[in-house]
Length: 494
Image (cartoon, rainbow, N blue to C red):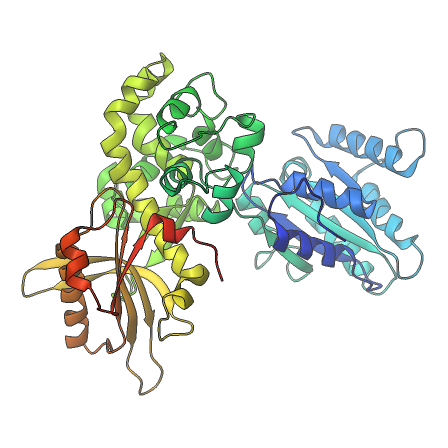
C-alpha cells in the first residue's frame, strides 16, 4: 500500500508497519511502537488504521472504569453495533479484542491499535499480562489480530519487553519513531535553500514534526536574517506553545519525580560539563548520587552516552533533544525576563552563549551524523564500516589534550592494529585556519606513536563560518585534507 501523500518522510516506518499489518500468519502478532511525544506516532498510526480498515483506540488519562467505557464505545462504533459494548472488566475486553481477529476469514488480518498504552497501564497494571495470555493462546488457535501497542512514555514502553516483563519475547515488531534527520528536517521547515538557517533552526527545534504544524501553524523563518525575529515571536515568547515545551518534555516522563534535579543534570551537560564527574561537580552531588538520574534520562531518550573512541572506558553525555539544550543554555537562566516579554533583550545578550553551548556542539554532532549517513563513502575513506565518534588525544609532552570532534576508527582484529581513517575538527562560528589543521596533524602523530595505524588517515575540517585563505593555500593539492562547509552537509546523497 502506498504511503498517504500527507505523511512527510517516514518511508521506513510506514513500510515496516504495512509489512506487520499485512502478515498472513495464522497466529496473533504483537508490535510495539514508541517514541517521544510530538514525533507524529498517532498521525502515522491513524493513517495506517484507515488504510487497513483497522480499529484505533487512543487512551486518555482516566480511571480504569472510564477507560473501559471509552474502549467499549469505540468498539461499538467500529463494529457497527449501534451502541457501546459493555465490559465487566479488562479481562473480558482484551479477550473480546482478540476474538475479533479470530472471526476473520482464513488469511485475513485485523489491525488493532491501542495508542497511549502507558495511560492504560497506569490505571490497569495487569494489562500487559492479559495481552500476554491472549498472545500465547492464539499461537495455537487461529487469529488474524495484528496488535500494535503505542506510547510516548519511553520508560514504560521500554519496560514492556524488558527481561522479566510479561510481553518479553512476544513482539514481532519494535519500532522507535525518531525525529527527522537534519536533512529531512531542513526540507520539512523549507530551509534547504539556506544551510546557515537550516543548521541554526535544527539546533533549536531539531526534527520534531509537531513543532511546525501543530505548535506554530506553519510559522517558519524565511532566512537566517529572519531567524532572530522568528525566535522572539515563537520559542522565546510566553504566548507561544513552544515556550514551555522543554519543561513539559521532562515532566511527562513517568519515572521523573524530582524535576529540579533532572533540570540541573541537563543544565550541566548543556554548559559543557558532560562527564559523570563534571556533572556531579556542577550540581554539587557525588558521582554515585547521579547514577539514577542519568539512567532515567537515557531510558527516556533525552540524553545519550557516547564512548571516547581513543580512551577505553571514558565517555561523555549529550542531550539528544535540541529544544532542551536551547532551553537550558538560553531560556532557563533568563526565565523571569522572558516571562515578562523581554525576548529581544534576552536574545541579544544570549547570541554568544547560543553559539558556544548550543549551535557549536550541535554542529559537531551533525558532522558525525554526516559521516554515518553516507559521508564515509563520499570522502572515499579506506574503511568500509568504521566506528564514527569523537574523543580526546592526550599530548603528554605539551601537557594538553586535543579534542577530536569527528573520527572514524577501526578497533582492529587479531594481529591487525587499531586504525583511524579520519580525524576531524568542527567549528560553527569560527573561521577555520592553519592552527586547526596543525592540531589534527599533531593528534595524528601522537596516535601513530601509540601504535595506531594512521597510514590512510585523512584530515577533515568542518566549518559553518568558512576557511581562511592561508589554510586554502596550505592544503592546495593535498588530497589528505578535506574542507567541508555547511552546504556540503546538506548536499544530496548519491
